[in-house]
Image (cartoon, rainbow, N blue to C red):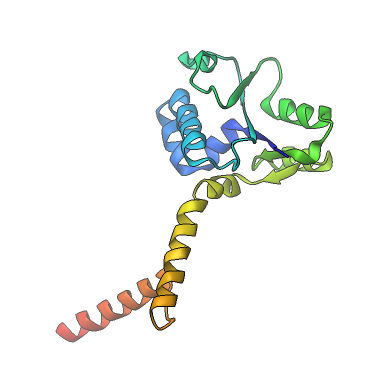
Length: 176
């Protein structure tokens, strides 16, 4: 069964450094960066999962008309006369199966309201992490491969960095 993801657009843009830097240039750049991320990284998982990106405002606001094909596989909604949060709340409330809806937001009030109505809540960080899941899986697989091929000892990156720092300090102190 497919799921529906309702994305609190500007909340995601403002909470994620990569998108926030694009947003600093312009609203269009921020929205385009988020859409590109969704298309390329597939944080929504299955292609059958529906993605609805909800923004406050009007379509074409700031010169970007998303109905013109930029987001064909992503439904983009610009709310008029009410907030994106209200649109997301109403969509969850009107759903026959709210348990199949995933709301992506760090807005506490919106998260509480949607969870109360039966939706699943993902933080912005969780959503972005889903987009990088394949990379972390590949890194994990390579560590597993090294364990199988080697003596079973693998040093985590954070520990390796600490060892490098300690050795650098010791070598520099000895040379001085």
